[in-house]
Amino acid sequence: MKWYSTRDQKREHGQSLREAVMMGLAPDGGLFVPERIPQADLSEAERRADESYASLASYLAGLFFDGDLDPQEIARQLASLYDFPVPLRRVGDRRYTLELFHGPTCAFKDFGAGFMGRMTGLLDRGGERLVILTATSGDTGSAVAHGFYNVPGVDVVVLYPEGRISRLQECQMTALGGNIHPLRVNGSFDDCQRLVKELFADEAFRHRRRVTSANSINLLRWIPQAFYYFYGYFLWRRETGGDHPVIVVPSGNCGNLAAGMLARRMGLPVEGFVAASNLNDVVPEFLETGIYLPRPSVRTPASAMDVGAPSNFERMLWLCGGDPDALRAELTGYRCDNATIRRTIDTLYERSGYLSDPHSAVGYAASVAVGKPGFYLSTAHPAKFGEVISSVTGRQVPLPERLESLTSLPQHADPLEVDLGALEEFVARV
Image (cartoon, rainbow, N blue to C red; front, side, top):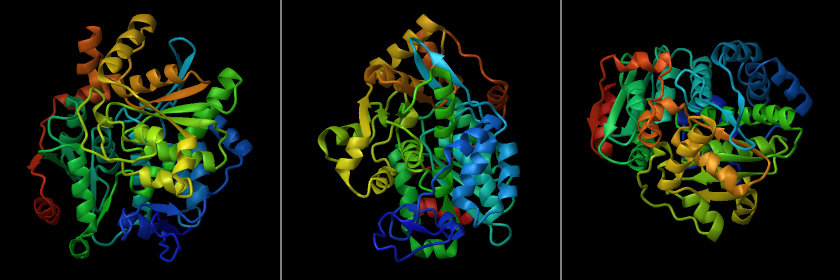
């Protein structure tokens, strides 16, 4: 399988899997996509899903990577990686959610970041030390840090916006030490993401230092997120007897949404998707008006979705053949203001005793508003946003043991201004 930039319309510059993964971002600034989208055998996928999530993921991963990675090694790695449950829960009045927060860092990012950590280790044995550079609005950083923690030959540099992520999210990055190097940036997530893209665009620097990205711009982060759409579909169909669900996706940088669209093109029978946003509603606005207008992000209780320039929009458009109208036909937009986020958290707890993190609450609110059969994705454990939830419900959210242990450990992060030179100087020293 060759990998091409979303901007390489003539397909003149195909890269191998290893080359594309190590570049992260294509040389022309585009995002890597496969030369073809493989088709899943739904009967085989369902049989594997009945065995385990890891078995399903191994089958689907093989459709993309068998020519580059040993299928038996993929299966072995994923059996130990995906050793946690992925349940479909009924919530409130006939709504269903796929809970994606039962992994090691309690967020859906564990699926992609863990996969990337394992597969990068297989692709890049030996050679010059590799720097993984990533920007985070909260959960990506902790998942990437965990996924690459103590991986031989790898250092991880994580940029996060100071004061704009939850305390637990920060602890998950700043308490590890070792090969994990957090940078608290005096700016927004968009500033962090822009710095990462500017560094990757600096070819002279990249010739001096071997660096790649673990954001969802990297294909090894993006593609495995498509796999849980299949798993959720099989669970939902068995639970409800329905077919062709509408899937609601809490959306910030839109890697999750682009992965769902990829799953559909692999043969998953989905009616469509809802791009559920907070006040950072660039994508819902585009779906309404046909105008894509990135802008500075604003702060909300659903902080991991505070993204004003979603990088995966380019992949979404590529999946629709570059046709904006086709993209608008596939997606429905929904925006959720801060008051609605808080009210939804409170209503779910009062009526159902169900604790929802702010991002998943956006998903629930969108599911109710759209009113079509299907399910929404729950993207983070409520304990990661305990401050928001307790301020609404008056109830303290119990911490899972794997989170509680982090709070007592020493924390360290280096400060960084929004300055490319300062970032490059730091990465050069790692």
